[in-house]
Image 1 (cartoon, rainbow, N blue to C red):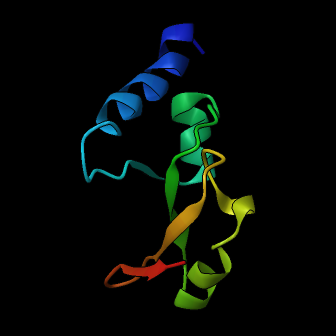
Image 2 (tube, helix red, strand yellow):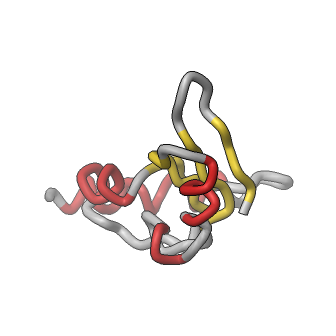
Length: 87
């Protein structure tokens, strides 16, 4: 992966995080994050997508499911309607 692609995710959140009242996070799966950003590790909140049930979404509130290495704060289960779970 080109160095510029790996650096891009690091620069944008840093600028946004300096704005008052702004919480910066990443919505992704580990697979997507690895494909897009080369697995770049950032201490940002994660909203983990891809669970097939609410129980599975709850189980993903662990560091093992973090795409970026930051805390998992939300998870999402898909279905007829997406359901979000706050960790």
